[in-house]
Image (tube, rainbow over all chains, first blue to last red):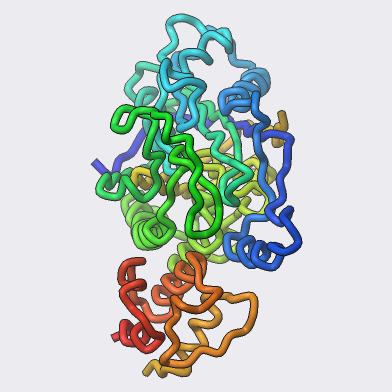
Amino acid sequence: MGLSTVHNVRYRGMATCVPKHKVSNLDCPPAKRAERERLTRNIGIYERRLCPGWQCFSDLAFEATEQLLAELEWQRDEIDALIVVTQSPDYLIPSTAIILQDRLGLSHATIAFDVNLGCSGYPFGLHLLGSMIAAGTVKKGLLLVGDRSGSVREPLFSDAGTVTALEFDASAPPMYFDLNSDGSGYRAIILPVGAHREPPRMQHFIPFKGEDGEWRTAYDLQLDGAAVLSFSTQRVPPAVKHLIGYAGVPEESIDFFLFHQANRMINETIRKKLGLPTEKVPSTLHDFGNTSSASIPVTMTVRIRDELLARPTRLLMCGFGIGLSWGTALVDIDGASFLPLIEA
Amino acid sequence: MATIGDFIEKFTTAVDFQDPVEITPDTVFADLAQWDSLAALGTIVMFDMEYGKTITGETLMSCRTINDLFALIG
């Protein structure tokens, strides 16, 4: 499919919730300080938000949703669909979205299910819910996106939950999408054990010391940095150009380019390849790290909320990563609600 | 035309080592005490941005010396 246009869908609002707990990447033994400084400088991530043990992604998304529904004055029984995009569900099964249907007090007539996508997830989620609305099935829908992927043992990932409200509106400007998948790279970012291909076994919990001197288990995420870097910097710039060409809008008309916040090396390479000025490419890496599928909404809330509230805004959003998967969306936003950052 | 001196300068910036280290065309880069995955990523980005050359992690690690890397520019 690749390219598509979705009509009659209004972007009504969005809210972001992060854990209160901050962790500094420079908080390390003095002997490791210089090495850590070099690392943080290159990945561009200094501070992250981590959930305490009791807090799940769904708790953050729940909080954001409660507050956005109140702001929009949407009634619970008006919500026709609740789609959750996450790779950190409450349980392997059932779907977190269905648990949230009940917890949020939505009606039994709500369509609710999870989508298993990570860093690329936001444009895919907008397209999925947007298409259901465009088809006339759904009038008002909620898209809950994010992950609890952070850990003190690695410096990249940070936790966040977000909610986006979409509504049928015949006068809404079109949304444009370019969505892609390449499963040949599925090993580039993988949690290799614990599901059906390699079910949980005792030996998966036995720690081993990696080449870098850090202890790991088979339950830690495996990430091939070079493969992810090559994928991101080769795939993303042409995808962005492709979508702009398809939408037929002048590049100068785009107010902000919102990229998934992977790390500074990747994001700066993409920005430079596209020849974009830094002021059009907001970033939240410094204070919020890589918030997986939530990184585009997190950046909207933290960096450009004032602009989004002040005037009509044209956004180019691009998510990319685990799968491998990459999706780009062009969305015009006018008169939507954006809540200040919520901390829970 | 790219020169080896110019290349070594760019390489040194790309790997961003904490402590300065002398690099010559014959240096076996993977044997440098500070060589790590971050240095490898920096080198891949440098090839892309400075020389318009896409190299994979495997290609990088198939090289031994700085001269071998320089030869990749082609």
